[in-house]
Amino acid sequence: MDLTSIPLMAALKKRMQWLHSNQSALSQNIANADTPGYKAQELDKQDFSGLVDDLSSAGGATKMRSAAATGMRANRAGHMGPGGGGADDVQMKDAKGREESPTGNTVVLEEEMLKVADNQMQYGMVVNLYKKNIGLLKTAMGKGGGR
Image (cartoon, rainbow, N blue to C red; front, side, top):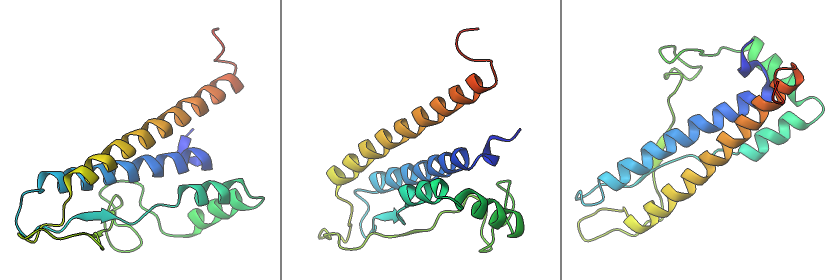
């Protein structure tokens, strides 16, 4: 059984992938903090709570399954997604509203470090949710609970 066939597990997997991509963007910003003319990059925000709300609504899981079954999807990293990009492609954009240094750089190292810490906490939370759900599945199958 593929765990991503369970909508909640699929949502957790998507969140982990987004957080991983966000960590990469933050790392790139930190690495270029002293590069003249570098514009800080950021990902579009992911509405994880909205995704979970959709799953918990009456027809949310069915709606997601039917959309996944009828729509084009990429299930391997080398496949092209519906938009033409790779399956794991995440759109990065220049961060707007940032103060620019005299060299043209828009990275504020302190802000980026705070974002890295927040990203790490969110990733830890998602990993814990994933572990708890795996434990619940094991218990439901009779393989959990110290047997």
